[in-house]
Image (tube, rainbow, N blue to C red; front, side):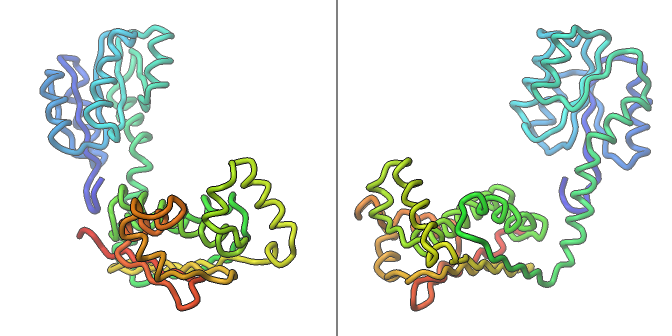
Amino acid sequence: MAIGDKPRIIIIDGASPLRSGLRHALMDRGCIVKLFSAEDKGLNELSRSHYDLLIVRVKSADEDSLRHLMDARRISPETLLILLASRATSEGAVIALREGASDLLVEPFSAEDVANSAETAIAPLREEMHVRKVFCCIVHENREFLIPSDEPAIGPVVDILVENLTRAGVCSMIESRLVAMALTEAIANAMYHGNLNISPRLKLSLSAAEFLEEIRKRKSVEEFRARKIRIRCDLTPAQVKYVISDEGEGFDHREALSAAVAPADVDSHAGRGLFLLRNIMDEVIYNEKGNEVTLIKRVSFQ
């Protein structure tokens, strides 16, 4: 649901008496509704434009009729789906909900019942729309983290670091996932190669079990165990900037950045992580010592 848009809904219903009443009930709740009698025309419309919710009427919610769900999922995986059925088998109901239907209503039900189900399904979308409106007004957001050298800490922190990128209009959802990949790589580098002083060459020479054992040994040493990773995030309407610093000895970032231009031409231990960073972020800048990296992603769409 784009910023400022109302929820967009398609109804595919051949000839039931609820058609008109349901359409008006949803429109009264602030939705944009398109009604189709023919399934092929409704699915064709779904393939051409974005819709938040698809409501499909079927005679029976059994395994055969669930092709409606499968077709809709193939055409638009992000569109929510509600099935309306005259009857349903228990197996069909389980399959429908397991395969991603937001709800399955079996007669008798009213237009208001369906509208209430639709309202429940799209409530998170409405909330997200309101959040995005607020983030359109953002001037500056600043966050700072100080985390231990523990791998389980990386994922939750990365989730927080990217959660507002799409809302603030800096990048698309797909790009925000790529930024999350870059941050995960950079923080892992700070943790293993920086604070724990495990060289890329040594890491690649170890098996997974040996690598975990090496981490355990190093974290048993007070010098390594006490080290932290500092992460600063500055978000504006124009860009997001992350500064990630560790307490290690640093590294020769000039040589590494040069290798990152063509990682296939260097040893398997060198250049690959930096190649990822450089191809996702717009700028990758290291301090002189090499224990701090600045990652910048500029706005990619309006």
